[in-house]
Image 1: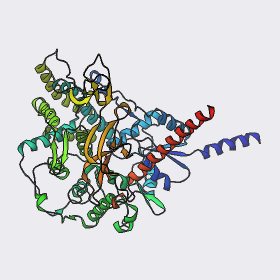
Image 2 (image 1 turned 45 degrees about the horizontal axis):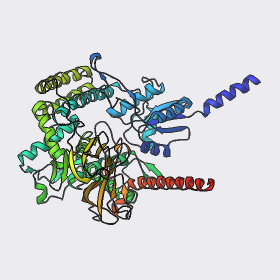
Image 3 (image 1 turned 90 degrees about the horizontal axis):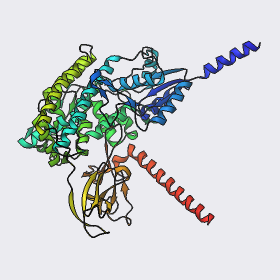
Image 4 (image 1 turned 45 degrees about the vertical axis):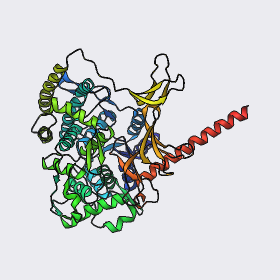
Amino acid sequence: MKRNSKSKSKKSKVSRLKTLILTETAEKAKTIRKFIGRQYLVASSDGFLRDLPKTQLGLDIENDFEPKYITVRGKGKLLEQLRKETLKARRIYLATDSDYEGEMIALHYCQLFGVNPVSNCRLVFNEVTKDSLKSAIKNATSIDMRPVEAYEARRAIDRLFIYELNPLLWYKIYRGISINRHQALVLKMICDQEKKLQPIIEEDNNVIDKPNSLKNILFASAKKLKLPIGNIAIAMRQLYEGVNIENTCTGLITYNKDDEIRPSSEMRTPESVKEFLTSNQWKIYNLIWQYSTNGHLEDDTTDSSDVKMIRYNDYTLMRELDAKGLSWTKTFVVAICGLLKRKYVEMTEGGYKPTKLGLNVFDVLKENFSTIISLKMAKKIETQIEDVYNGQLDKLQVINDFYKQFNAALKKAHDKIGEDIKPKEPPIVETDEICDKCGRKMLLKRSRYGLFLACSGYPECKNTKPYIEYLEEKCPKCGGRLTKRKWNKGREFYTCENFPQCDFSTWDEPQPKHCNECGAALFLHRFKDRPAMIYCSNENCPSRVNHPINKIHERWKQLSESKKANKTNKANKVKAKS
């Protein structure tokens, strides 16, 4: 009898163990959690758990470019939490996106949590809905190594380009200058167009065909809706990962390796879901619906300003890349955001314009790597990576082919400048600011954390001060000028020049444009693992209804109030003791 009771006890414990579903984003995990059964647990890794180190190349060139993966900085605690969950799980399913990056993340899950990659652990689905997930569980498969090989080939090429090129840029311009392969390609296009200053003739065909293609949705969104490319990408990701519709949460559009996009249900018309979506989400969902039902999109927005442009905008850049046969949908958003952040280009009313620094960077690239950063080379690399995915080429062959050409160009460039030259330091600018300790003028210098003011009397006077940059953009609260300041370790934040009389402050970057809906100031919110998102500063603007920035601001507010409460409590305790 005792043996039977022990046996039953063991069986009941096993039956209580749950199946764990791992995915790469909290948003997707939240959606799955709402419609999956109680026998499942759902957890997210918030992107990659393992990656190449930021401070070094991370590839063993002498050993077939073997990648040296490490735990992503700051994710040690999350990794330990996930390990505990996996040890308690009866079974583990991997529900990452079905693309190169998603398959790589899934393989990392296997390596970190002891999952056999050839077991039926992989869930493949292209829409985050209950029926789609049930089907994926029923037809679970193994890790597909083809997209993993393709991912590692592309990552190695991109890594070699940026980490071996940067020191040359430091010699030629100054320390801290950096650019990746995709940014270099887009910068070349923008600079070439700036030097030609010839009108870009847009097609006057008012019908955009080829239904359900991701690139056509992006084309239409950029041209017809005139939305920033970062906002388009964010809204589409949100529609795929799931939104709250009445009493349920579900993905509204599909997504797969072939970039086919359509509504996940024919029953959800744009009007039926409008009240649950943000302004941008609804506009893009409406476009996707039109594609799906009509097979094309009637574009009624042609005007004289769209026919000829001197500079590239999002739409004309995307169209040019597409005309060259480049698979740009996954890389363009990140590239253009990077160029803007590094101040290599700026957005004007007439399109993207290179800055003086951007032109200097391009001159170095053009002189030494004109073939490497060409559209022809970019197309060749993309074709080879597709061949790796299709099993027609070995990834090592592709990496070697690129590195042979790139390394030869790099050696020639270094031969030109000689061996004894050292990296140039960033320029030092004399300011009108006076040192409050010795009366000398302060100098504008750059450290690893950004710009700061230092006394020109150094080393006799070692006084330093934070650098406050005054911007043209206005404070949304009082109308004063906004200022850019530095927080710990160089993180930038923005305040009003009238502080402390005006208490406005934000981490988000003010934009030169204004909201199309209400005319208020626009701000750019950056994510660690997703494209940046532009939003209106007016909380009552129609574009802010159901907007994801609302939750982010609410979290900031709660955190700020919590810190104030803790500070008050500490002060009260000190008073009580005294």
